[in-house]
Length: 257
Image 1 (cartoon, rainbow, N blue to C red):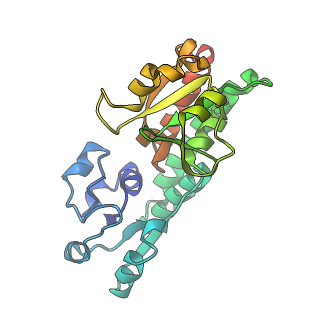
Image 2 (cartoon, rainbow, N blue to C red; image 1 turned 90 degrees about the vertical axis):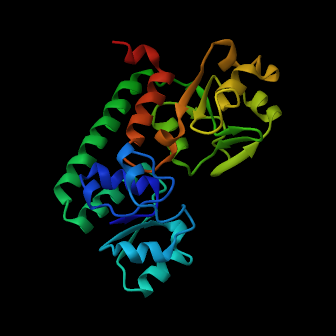
């Protein structure tokens, strides 16, 4: 199997197919064993010759590869399945699809059932807490310039399932914003992504140090939290872990028992 995305690599390992993986991208960093696999290029830049060289029975691609990569691989007679999940439900469907293509139907069904169980448990826990005023949440992807997430993103969906209100829900996709807008929308909770930049130059450091954000509820209440970007943006099995972390940040009292 060759994986053309970090999320696909995580799914393949989660199905117990790590040993069958003969090629991954340079960005496939989880689980740690993924780093030891042969690299067949970057995310959008796939080295065709390297893929041919490892002679895979199956290639797991993403919609990003629809343009030129997938048609070229298929032209060379290789079997490609494409995962293009835009929602949590579609991520689960994708896991089932990989299971079906690799003879791991049962493992895939079990994994999806476990994930669904954890999702349902979160919904059940936060449900009693949901009043008129859900906490307003902002996810900070990056701070210079300021990037956040709107509707139609997995991160937005996780915030909503966890019982939060994305303060940028009226926007679409990954979106740029500015300080004035952040101040005006006044999130009660800030989720700052880690995994990009250094400790000194990270979204969480910025969110805590930027003077013009001092009046935000999130700052006054000490509710600026850091979260691993991969847990809330990468469409794989660990999204459920991301959901659990977000829910605990939003409703700490429910999870302290």
